[in-house]
Amino acid sequence: MVRPCYVPRMSLAFPSRGFFGREVTIDIAGIRRGRRVVLWDDLDHYAYDWQDWTRPGDIIAVSRNGGWIRIAPFFEQWAIVAENFFREAHPRLRAKPHFHPFAFVGDALTCGDRRVLLGDIAHVEIAAIGRDVMVVVHERNVGEWMQADVPQIASFWLWIEELAARGVTIRSTLPMHLPNIPVTRDENIPNARVV
Image 1 (cartoon, rainbow, N blue to C red):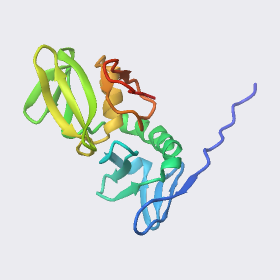
Image 2 (tube, rainbow, N blue to C red):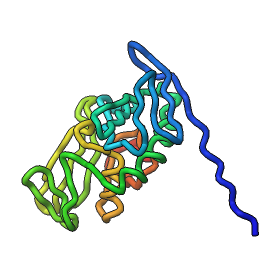
Image 3 (cartoon, rainbow, N blue to C red):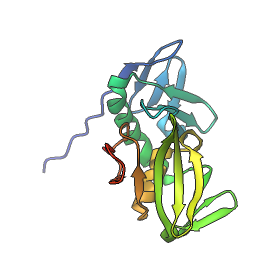
Image 4 (cartoon, one colour):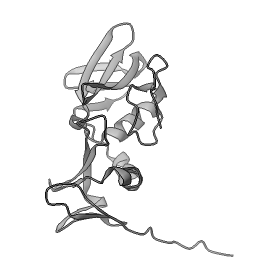
């Protein structure tokens, strides 16, 4: 019998944008930037700091002890860096999801003291006003139920994946910078492109 062999993933090191740009490394153990380290096993959540829809957002990995690392790759490297981060982070975060200010309680989505049944959600829209990126949850036959800025939602892309897995339609009016998640194109919006 031939036993499968395990080949560990190679590390991905890339320069980061910013005033004190330092190399960031994503590997099998976690994320490193200079002396800062967030181990995968200590990852609590991440923030997707998407302030301008015309370019990809930064990923801020937050550990359980409050430490954090900003992952801010240059545009040309964003897709590969994001793919590597999400591939390692999402399976770990699914075990104990943290989507503040939202939460899943049974068959409902909550935000603070507000609650909507998942079956009553018409769709969740990723949109922009000016350059600011936001999410709008639309309740069926009512309209807007809740809106939030993307950076305010913990583990944003995992939250979007979880909504889609629970049968909620996700729409985007934005033409770029969406990781490989199940998002439908809004046919009423010209030039909308979803990856």
